[in-house]
Image 1: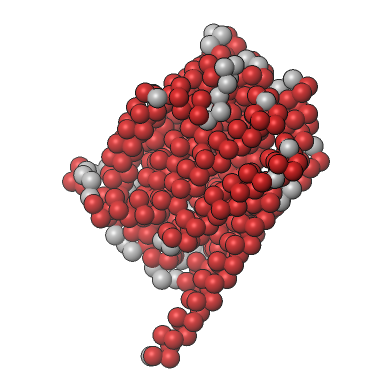
Image 2: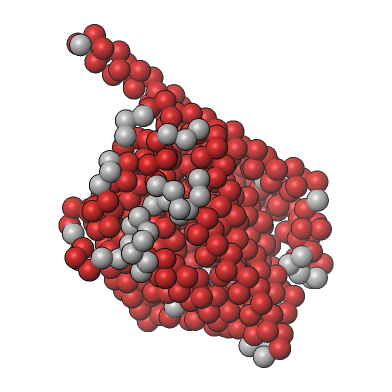
Length: 456
């Protein structure tokens, strides 16, 4: 599907073709998005030092909270938009677009302002030490000031993808990351602005991406575009956005809590460099996880549209293809982490101790990584069909129900390796819970369909 075709093709074109055409741009966009953080980590590690890498890792919980509020609006709005388009209701899709803008502005200003006001206590609570706090503070001050730009860019890009423009959404992400790749080394190595320079480069790159997205929605020839007649908050739409977006919000909020516990555990059993090792490992794992999430973003408009149009067979076929693709992606991550962890880690740092810690951690953390792809796809499937409660449960199960207890128990037996081992243990359990939930959904759906036929 080209970006000039009607979104109604989501209900008629072959599923395999649609999934490739929607997922590849989304995968590229998500992979490129994860490169933001990888690029920052590489430039900071090579240009500022190992302690700066640890300081960057301390910011992960706060960054997860930033993303949580952004996804609450952006993913919720994108899902609702595609369902409305499946119902041929462009008016409510347009109203959703405007509600996304207002909610992005309100949440970003509120959250960013409060976080700036209490930044040092927050970072200390998240695990910052006297040596890592200055780096964490400098990085987050810039990003928090720029939260309105980041929220609008990410939120509107999600809506653009879900309303029939996957290629444009991909291009906006590529533009932003290419800008970051160009600007970051100038700010860090030429201007000597250190970790603050990395943050400034990210903010400037997001501004460039936002301009591209805004130009799209100001174009009245596009399927869904800005229309002042619908430029107001509407309680019913806000409620639906928040209901659907609650699942990714809680997932990222739980990630915040998990990373706090992880950081504190690593400080206890390995010190600041162990926190830095987790920061490197997290960046690598997120590259593959974000690729799997790109697949789900490609699935989301297809599933949302066909679910709204009551084309169940097409919904199910999309899910099956998505599970296969997601499993392949994270299995690749497993293979790389087991075979060549040290060369991967060397991209981020030249510190020998940090290299050893991160290489060992990457191997252990990825032991069950091949199961993550299908778990991500299944969780997002329920989100795409509006089953918010199930999606929330699956999103929370891995982190809140399984990972946190493992983090509190296993290090007592195996020390720092116990912290790493908590990740694959929770991955395996979450996979079985997600698979069981999916089986129950189809089993109950089959019973409902059979009962309806008997009544007829």
